[in-house]
Image (cartoon, rainbow, N blue to C red; front, side, top):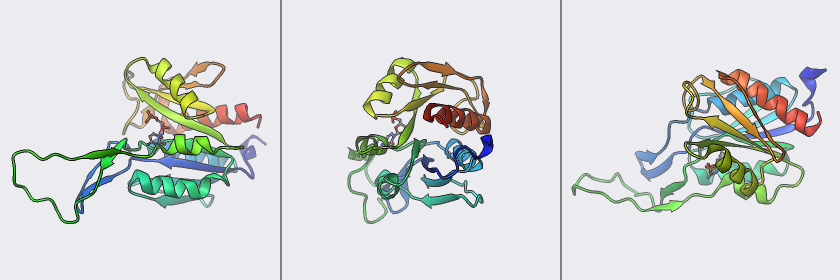
Length: 219
Ligand code: C5P
């Protein structure tokens, strides 16, 4: 039946923001809540899949028996957790808003207020999707893109660069779409073309994404 079309399949989903430590009490983060990633987890599980969510700091969780959540803080921790799971999954969805940079060496003690300016030295974080994209074999992979200019062109570039099968473009220009909203408006692109969807709840958006994944996988 349609509801069990992912029976026996294993899915890895990254979700939420990452927090990059500045010192023991401060971090660099972003406004991602994890809503899209957790909505996807619920939908994949409802279709019979077993889901591993690797989530940055988020208030969200799941009580679904087929969803297992690993909580991490930083991009490096997220990569390590994902590397341990990636070879065993059939589908990987990279929905996390991973920080591009992190403070090179977090201070051991709380940084004291002194000078009028403070300079932080940042180094590039690993790209989790690109790293795993390089070693993918059977995995069907899905990425997200959030752009403000040349949306379609940048999304297509990422589709190729990160070796995704599909990329989901969030339309930031649309009211109610993207970060921390309960709704989202997406365009899904693959190597053959694209389809645009209406503004909907993140649950409904997750249903659309899972439908497209199943269709593309021939399930
Ligand atoms: O390059 P950009 O950050 O726009 O790419 C977005 C896609 O790549 C998302 O699917 C995101 O989860 C993933 N990504 C990642 N690790 C990073 C940066 C982005 O997995 N360090």
